[in-house]
Amino acid sequence: MRAKLAYLIFSIALVITSCSKNDDGIFFEIPNEVQTQDFIWRGFNTWYFWKDQQPILNNSKLDNSEDYIDFLKEYNNPVSLFENILHPEDRFSFYSQDYRALTNFLQGIRTDDGMVYRLYRLGFDDRIIVAVKYVIPNSSAAALGIKRGDLFGTVDGVVLDESNYQDLLSSSKTSLRLTKIRFENQEWTDEQESITLVKTEGLVENPVFKDSIYTIDNQKIGYLIYNAFISNYEEELNQVFTNFKNNQVNSLILDLRYNSGGSTANAAILASMIYSSNTELLFARQRWNALWQGRFSNEALNENFRDQTLGGSSINSLGLNKIIIITESGTASASELLINGLAPYMDVVLVGDKTRGKNEFSLTLVDDPQSPDFPYLYRESRQSFINPNVQWGLQPIVGRFENSAGFSDFTAGFEPDVFYSEDPVNLGLLGQIDEPLLSLAISQLTGNNASMKFSGNNFEKVDDNIKGFLNLELR
Image 1: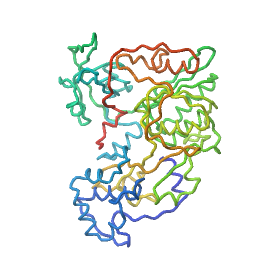
Image 2: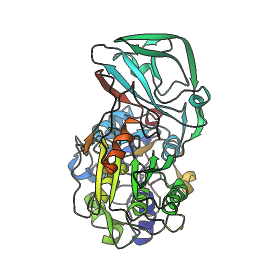
Image 3: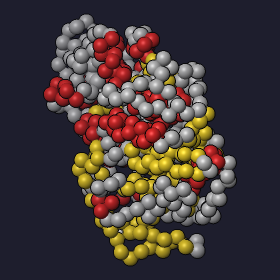
Image 4: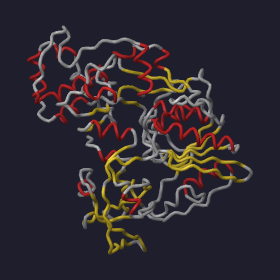
């Protein structure tokens, strides 16, 4: 979305009132103690997708400066104002009290221990376990030898359950002391030795997690695990597809099971690598609130397939007519945009679990009301203009995407064509052809039924540590 707005900056001139004046252009001072509330209200009043449906967002509040400031003072805690603004349909707007943490996270940089996990509860037991999904290279978890499939049952010496797991795994902790656990004969057995994870500041995760080529039944099958849509890694992503093309890959399995989204422009570029670099083809169309929708041209609202990366490299497109995409309940946002955008053009087969159902897109807002053409929009070059009294960053939902067929109704998520929910005691190794989900995906290309192993246990998903979102102060 940020790349599209960079284009819009040059395509439209727009003037919107700053945070220190009313609709008559008369300046008034906002007291220090409610400047954060002022930023939250004005940011949402400018950009929020459901702006016209929320009575709390109304330009008339600015008619009288004293009344407006009294309104802000009703919310001693800015979080309460944020929560009161949200529309009932809004499941995904969030905030961070440190915009730097938010913007770093969106670039794959964060303070983290490197262990990406999911929480499960066994059907007959109240106990909750931590199941490691994967480990980020060069992290504390990697240095300690933690690996996919490891199970942990206690944190800081306390057994995890429904009442305590959020506190024990709180993002505010700088370290976690974990004890491994085994599940055998319907019983949990705790290991004696514990390990201590320490969060690393500025940990960088490369979203191009793994790529492989398999030759099976005379098919050249490309396999890519892509864990976030981050534009900074487009050249590396393009190199993967160059390798696929040079090795005559004719089938592709795209693994998005742990991809919770990111840059929509990056999703369009990946779609172009998969299907076509014909820039005349529509990938997705944006829908904004009434304030913005009528001001953008059709060209600005349309996200077409691309023939170049943002860095200017020619895209190497495979030109496929079928793709297998591995999904999970954490597959969301730009991942679902990719699925929906490709669907009118090719056979998209989903293997795994139902996706999250996020058909909206968001922007990063900071307290920079004078940001040219687009007030409050975060721009790295304008950090010195951000109000030093307000360090919050907002990530509100500002629009929805529909595909070239006009379809956008997937708020319930995309149902898989072949269902399989990961079994925490049988995760397998990512990239190995006998890993359960990859094996199922390959069988959709070869026609050979995958032989699946199930633990026979009734595990219930409890919560997700989705790519570090728990490291931000979110609602």
